[in-house]
Amino acid sequence: EVVLTQSPATLSVSPGERATLSCRASQSVSSNFAWHQQKPGQAPRLLVYGASTRATGIPARFSGSGSGTYFTLTISSLQSEDFAVYYCQQYNKWPPSFGQGTKLEIK
Amino acid sequence: EVRLLESGGGLVQPGGSLRLSCAASGFSFTNSAMAWVRQVPGRGLEWVSGLNRDTLSTNYADSVKGRFTISRDNSKNTLFLQMTSLRADDTAIYFCARDAVTLFGVLMTDWGQGTLVTVSS
Image (cartoon, rainbow over all chains, first blue to last red):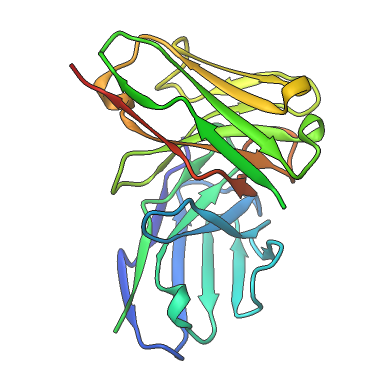
């Protein structure tokens, strides 16, 4: 199984600032890679797939990059609604797997 | 608007069975790969099972293989997860998901709100 390691576990950022979240895969997953956002008490929501393609309706301040084993999600100017837990996911190898999550909190 | 509505969760004793349902609307269910993903409350996400869009082949996480069965009824736009031989570590919120990108039910493009399954005596 591909192990995804997210860093940091918790990220404290002020509204309006930039946030960068990272995810490293234990083996190459090409660009079959996604980011999901989850707010308390809600279902996850897909933000990015194919490593860098924003899902339908996702604001342009969210951008994904990377390939192979290292990926990042950047939120260019944090809005209040962006504070949540973010999960990375690979769908290149069986079984699909998720990272442990990064909690983005208000500084 | 894509809607996925899970039902069937609840309290079940260890060794028992439960069938989850997911009513889908707002998209072509027949032409979509589907999946189940679970989450222990307060913990991370675990892919459980996927259903291939074209071949209807199924795949399972090792943790549930031989105990869970994913299926669909296209006439009712409904996805199912039959769970047997349930264990305490199956306790989780179970999310139904649509995969609108791949054929295999491995990329969750749309998520339901989830249904809680509690396995306890």
